[in-house]
Image 1 (cartoon, rainbow over the protein chains, first blue to last red):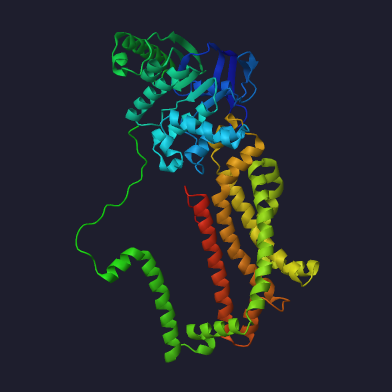
Image 2 (cartoon, one colour):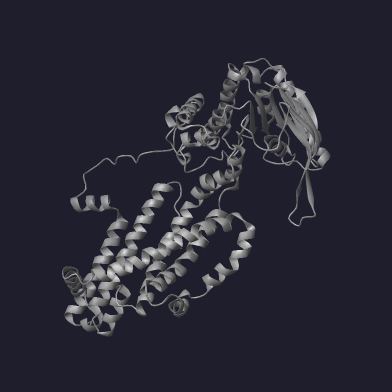
Length: 261
Length: 279
């Protein structure tokens, strides 16, 4: 279980005086085994909150507790998937997947075995020896996903992981992710801009508003699983469309409130 | 899984078989043919001008005279001691410059405080003609090998520092953050992310450093030396033995090109995803 308690965060401007309030007093609890999306416009602090939860960033105020322990830095029970993949260009797909295991002192033989397993879970067993520059965007993100899964985390934090992909590849990756998730039902926090993506993947969608970043709505998504077997039926169902419209209405209220529309 | 790696082979051209010369040209590549053709043309023009008397061989020598001299100097063993003396100075000076310059550049790239403390010195050293330090180095270290190694070191270390620092500064911060999120400690970030990421810059620095090293070796050997390629060149110059001057130049240029090619090869092996030109 992830408990986010009264987290606020400000980024100091370059002159040191100006502070951009990225998050204001956010409290949130994520139950184990749920797939939660953070949805909202740019600048709503959803990525900041994810980095705070991972331990990459210390919040200005408030704290995050995971399974009864306070987050003070990155830990092996959680793993990140990044929007820009962030693969090391001098390492092969296998080398990239082995990287976190190497950092954590896992022995060579076990590293190789775990990396092979993670790569085959994302369908890249034939591409282990390829360098990132030899792979397509979708394949790079599969490597990013394998790298995170290889750690064996209880919590998977995904920061707009499909945001840099073509629309078709993006839909394929969503379905792949649903298949993977149905195997072990890890706790996932998935940051996204896309309403359809959030509704299709999630058990719950937390919507963020801007200036300052805060939670404006929290919706449970009650759609049948597995969702990957007939994704078209899910996406055209009345319930899906209802969720989608509700969320869009809330988003538009947010944007008009900001005076940007 | 319908995605494929973006590797494609050029399509086979159908049609008539081209002639032998054309096939050779295509296989060698236009640029390579032009490169070699240019050199051959230059040497032929030089040789020809010298033979018909447009150039005075006493001043300009000629490729055949230089080659003759080179072969005779290799044959009688008179070239080798000079090459060995210069190689010794170059290897020591350049080696120290890499050993000192790379860690210093890494430290400057990683720490604003270290950069603030060291940068005035590196900037000053970079802006000044390092050759001007030679008289001082001779006073401090004597006329033996130490002052010559020190001059080579001064000339080349600055390039190693600046290039390594630039390599560290360009490291993708997202990669560092990614490593951190996967539990890398400071040492692991430095060795497994920063250093490999800066490697193409470091190798580019070494390529520039080799050039600087050769210049400094020659300059150091003009003064107070009894061996070395710089000594050989200037002694021959004093005797109007232009062929021997060119022998020294050719040996130095060959060594420079050899090391440059070697470092390019290393760079391609270690950093196949990017190629940075030295300069």
